[in-house]
Image (cartoon, one colour):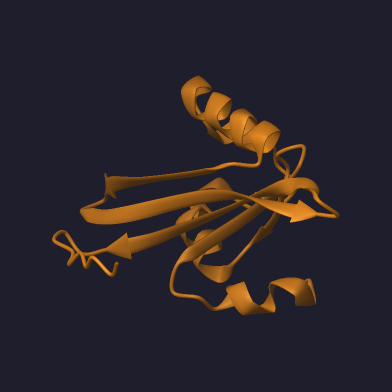
Length: 112
């Protein structure tokens, strides 16, 4: 394992990282568990596992260096998905996706 990802390896959420060409370069233990039925996805391109609309969003994030957040329900669990660009030498190096289980009802605080 790349030592640069040690912080993410044992997190209680799924972390997947791709490079600027959308090739998966890292998946933590949780992400590997979630996608185990698909085999080892390291080295695979994200286009192969996303429908056209999602692939367009990924391409846009890679182009602009932006972020995207949304919630889903899957297998009886509500999850928040956060996708954001990571940068190397001031340029987009790829994307990080963090997927975490969240409660059905979640407190919200205004801290302004």
